[in-house]
Length: 226
Image 1 (tube, rainbow, N blue to C red):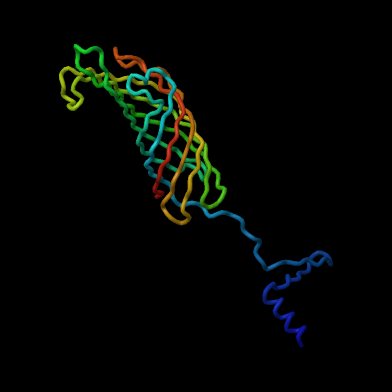
Image 2: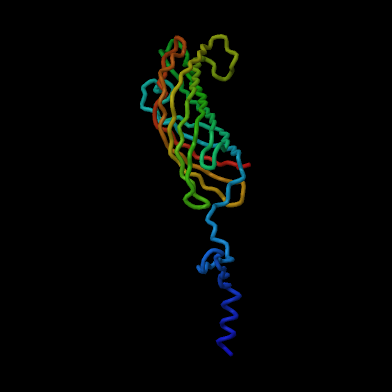
């Protein structure tokens, strides 16, 4: 009696295969009614990511010493990221950095404000891997457009001073980074951190000098995934 009940339970949990006779010979084939296991991961339905970040740009170039002695520039940025493949995204970034100082030539002349404003525009692919449903390391390479503006002004409190000198320079280059993204599963929020290097040509900024925007970069940010 007990053995019959156990056999019935086994049948309910794991039904035996169906026996089918081949039409041409006496071979007996077993056909299972169970579906094979599925291992596909759930595709991410979100295709657009918008983010804001805070970053540092480190440089050992002496061209920056006029504007401040520290070897870094703090900047704020934004990015848009479009999924073009399951593991590949096209990323466009913008970051603005500013630094300045007061220059004194002699006691006979007033101090002059020297300011450098940098805008960096970059575009390129990013490829990631899924380690867990929350952790996504990635590599990214971007073409860079660097725009720098130098302003010398004896009255930095106003932008309409007729005595100010202002010049703009442009150059191009490359940014490569390695980073990771933390995603909240089944939600729109994520955070990221990335570290890399920036290579660029020299930018002649009118008669006010030449800037060489090269060095290490790091960025931390938050994003919404749509």
